[in-house]
Amino acid sequence: MLELYHDWRSFCSIKVRLCLAEKGLSWESRFVDLMKLEHTTPDYLKLNPNGVVPTLVHDGVPIHESTIINEYLNEVFPTPALMPDNPVDRARARFWVKFEDDVLHPAIRPATFALMMSPELAERSDEELEAMVASHPNKARAEEYRRTARQPIDQAKVEAARQTIITALGRLERRLSEVPWLGGQTYSLADIAAAPFIDRLEELNLTDLWKSHGAIRDWIARTKARPAYQIAIPDNEQRFAAAVRPSAA
Ligand SMILES: N[C@@H](CCC(=O)N[C@@H](CS)C(=O)NCC(=O)O)C(=O)O
Image (cartoon, rainbow, N blue to C red; front, side):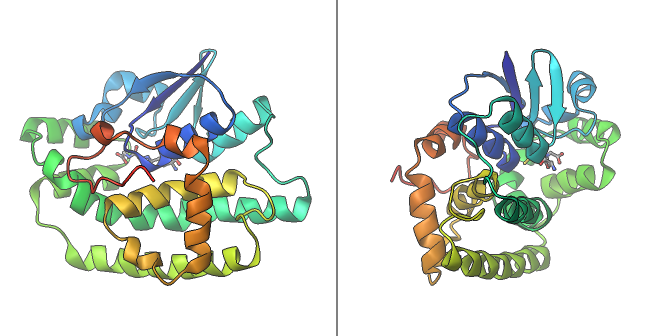
């Protein structure tokens, strides 16, 4: 049995749900509400001491980290294969998965906190915030939650992240001008890692950033046309209250 501890809205959770959907796997949803700080409760920290979602539990065995979870799923459920079959393309695919972990996900966080999460986090009481800071294994992240809940948006940080996103989109555009998918000729874990970025930039109303990137827009259209994409992204009622609702197309 597969259980996924996840938040419908979380970038890394979408990444794992995409992989599960591409594999056609059924799984039990264990919703961990990040806005209610449920990821830092003692029970959840026992399951994932990093205090983050997602966590996959396969027949009682927890697996952490979205990239590692997707590699695990690809090994244990090999069909359809989600890594290229030659070593050079596999190396390229791994590079783009790492690019998502190192660049895309950190770059999207400031705007997500500022524009999507702050209204809901502001509703948390001081006691809840203090308990979260005390129990969160990553104090820098805990402070980010507290700051978001109580202080004005740090516009300079959001702008710096926007510049990082613009540079990242330039790199993605160059890659996708050469090959149809990030890993080369076939859809792979690399595309799965980057796909949550599409939905998040839509929610943040930042799609202008790829307006002049024809190869990215083509990749987005092909990615969104995959049935797994529509299964994995949140329904409207599962989104942040502040989200711009993307059309179903
Ligand atoms: N590298 C981790 C990152 C996990 C992560 O940052 N998850 C976010 C949601 S996308 C989270 O749980 N944030 C809560 C927090 O940082 O307190 C992964 O890929 O699984």
